[in-house]
Length: 430
Image 1 (cartoon, rainbow, N blue to C red):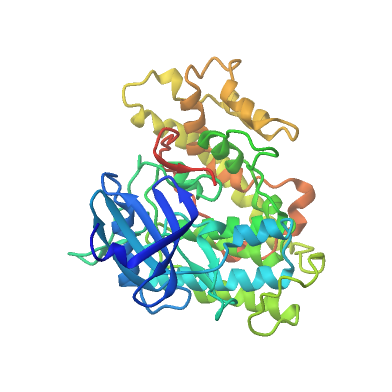
Image 2 (image 1 turned 45 degrees about the horizontal axis):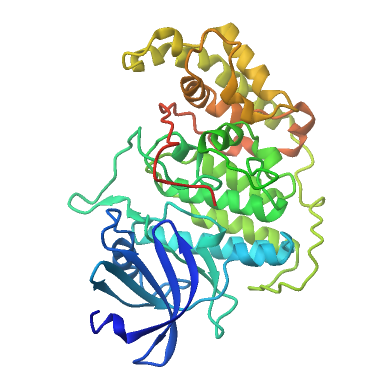
């Protein structure tokens, strides 16, 4: 064992994942406890090496763990960073999956700030979820830290200083519960995908769960999560949240692949909500009441123009579906046409089938009564490709009164070809 790694005395295992282990260790040079991450050097993913490189490049930011040292010893890579507190997921479970509105607003503001800083350093995280955010050390418990940069990559090409190109059929990278729809569908990730995952975190903290999370701990495939996620409207996703969260989600979904997000706009929405709640500065008081009463925060009506604009957008998306499906003939890749192309009547069946309120979405993988589809994976791809926007904007008439200012944002309407990523090794559920 190298002199460098013998510097640390392992005390106990504090974490374990697909790519290695994390130990509480004593730095014998400074007598300070640290987090020591270890992975096999035979792992072709080399996530720890990537994490060390990223961490060194982003040092100095608020909520960024201090890099201590890294290296290789025998058949192991190691990385030592400062020891932090519990994760937001741990705190959420400890509080019976209930956070007070003041806490959620503070967490949202801090998480957005961490993402803005990371993006300013030309990196995207690609695995944003509650477990990646830790409370600070004992001397700084109110600061939220962003960790785990093993899947992080630069969105800028170093030689040309250009944005990475839009690509399809990419392997799944991230955690299925919090991944963006584009990530599920095999589209190259960019800054917008980190932010969509951030929106799912907000919804999770407000509701205690996400619609695609199973009620009991059972094995859930990435494809089943995709189908449920695709057919969950943003209105229902944020029905227990301040209206500003829905506005953030709508804005994030409008972002183009290379577009720089307007972090100031999103932050202003958090500030507006905090002013309404008479919240000043940062407060992570976990003991305050968790009785979240958002009734006065919700958008209670639509102007006539907003209603008209929403209906026009939905009609436009419906009209474009047939054209999009015809264009998909060019992407058959040798597969039988009747396995790919959706007839109008079949499309109506799919819409009715999926939108049935009491339908168990896991049964989507067992569709047999639609002869146009001989391959169930192809069915899911076409639903993802042709109905992405329409499903996202599918809002029950009884809930349309909850939307406001929709016309102030453009709606993303690109039509990427979907790639099922169920077999990819970087897909995680938690």
